[in-house]
Image (cartoon, rainbow, N blue to C red; front, side, top):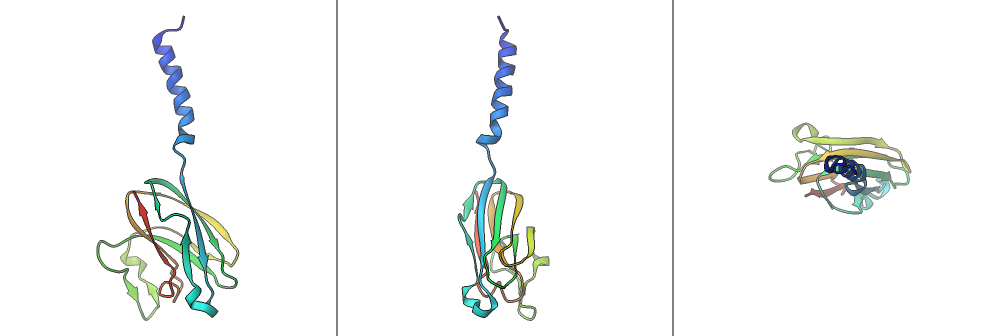
Length: 143
C-alpha cells in the first residue's frame, strides 16, 4: 500500500503536468489593412479586443496589397490622446511605455509577437508616417 504522501505527490505531479493546457496563452489575431492609395481603408482589426492578463500571442498579418505596416503595443496614457508629432506624422513613442512591436511587415507577411501583459488599457498602432491618423489604431484591454 502506498503512503498518503506518495499518493499526494503523484497527484500533484499529474495536475502540474496538465496545467499548461488549462492555462494556455491568449491568442489574438491582428489584421493590418490598407494602402497609401486608399488611406481611408487603413485599420487594425482584432478578433478580440479583451483578454485575460498573462502571456499573450499576437498573430499579426499585413493584409495590405502594397503597403508595409508595423504593430506597436503601448500602454494607454492615463488621460487624453497619445502624444502625436504632426510634423513627423507619427506618435511620439518615447513619451509612452512601449510593450513590444513588430516592425516593417511587408504586404502578405505574418509574424507573432509574444508579450506578458498585466491588467490595463493598451493601444495597438502602426506608427509608419501618416498611418496612425489614417485609422491604424485599436484599443485593447487586458483584464
